[in-house]
Length: 74
Image (cartoon, rainbow, N blue to C red; front, side, top):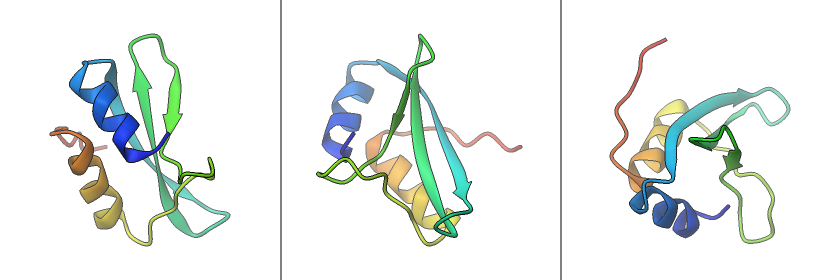
């Protein structure tokens, strides 16, 4: 799902969680959003390929572009 779709779902209160996951294959960070039913929505480019970010900070900044999500420490 591209960023604009994520923003729309966040505005509609469909998404309830964002997870930033270290992707060992690309050595980067990926972002998955979840809805209240547990469905997973990874952030992708316009071709449907999951996006990978170089740093945790960069991935966190993208999450905050989608919506004001509080950070939960592990």
